[in-house]
Length: 149
Image (cartoon, rainbow, N blue to C red):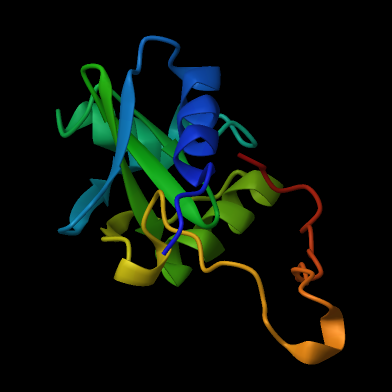
């Protein structure tokens, strides 16, 4: 597999919120975080670093900070960020929270990143004869009134 700039993009995203971070790596084990009523009460909708789950990560001392996105989440500890796959349940709560400031109390899981989606890997150029070697980009769907990381 070829090296790709995906790792640098991830570091740039994290540095937008936490400028002192020096490296980003993928998680190999999951993380479970309990969100309390207080976390949701003082959280800010639309802000990935101040949502209820990010506040819960800081409160439980699991991290110095967190960036919770719809697809991937970053947990910051010192100068290192760890990238997790955001579960579907967390994604639904994020949409609900960003639209109505309602994050349900409970235990939420951030999953490890699968081997095929690791930082630094690229699948390469398509060799399908019909597209002349061009990479076809999937159509993007943006959900309105929900954060973007």
